[in-house]
Length: 402
Image (cartoon, rainbow, N blue to C red; front, side, top):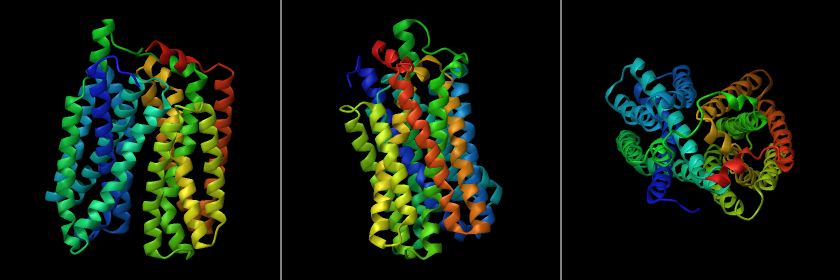
């Protein structure tokens, strides 16, 4: 993309780097939990509560950070919430109190949700409707997400007690993340300098836009499927006996590697293929490979299914967000509502799968994801029709003006 100023280039580069650190910080939550649980003597129920508190914090700040930015500015809002990353791990390192651990996990969610809100908003503001730039942003998250398990494995390979050093590493990454956000030029300040006013309306006019609902519910059902698979994949393979415990863990890493490859590919293809067509192709692959994954019993075919599923689904989220780029640019609070509503999918679906698995077995729990991937395919098809008819030109016209 072409930059109008050095400040815009700096804004994009620092946002990309901060989003990569967000991937490291976000993945540390689940990766370190087994070590924290064993060291602190926590039961499974309390460990599950910690994960839920992270999700609650993530959901709350996804909305609150956007609303707060209207009153105190987007940069001050992200600096306030992002400081929770380093502070949370300081609590984990130096406090064995269960209430402090609960507060720490809530704080990790607060930081993660705000970082997601800021990153997507900033990139959309710089390149409204540009799917390639957004896919690049989410590819950076994948790099961070893939890196931390490797770092943790290297630290604890000979001594599990060295997990505490990974916590010190996370504190350092949290501080570095905060410094990057501190150095990022404020999107609102840059816009004020050009136009004399803040970009974006603070009203709720986006509720009248069909594109708001199409994108929001496409993301909702996508996150249902993504979190359902990521959250239950290892358990599904182990409990059904399809794969060994070690191979099941390896499949989780393979999934993230393919998601990184998929996001990089989507970023490249988005400059050569209309994003409506690209999104539909990814959605068809997303559905087909999930059926493949669910029905296969051979190890090699399962590995191929995992690779295809991760590769296909990787670009759906950022490409969908790109369709509402103009809406987000026009209405400063639109992204908070989109992100918050969509995030409910990642919270609800794992619980639904667990309930079904408890009564009918893990296979039927995982099979419930079929419903949401099919609904998502219908929504993406509807989004395609809407855009092809020219009704969704809000973000296209906005993108041409910027």
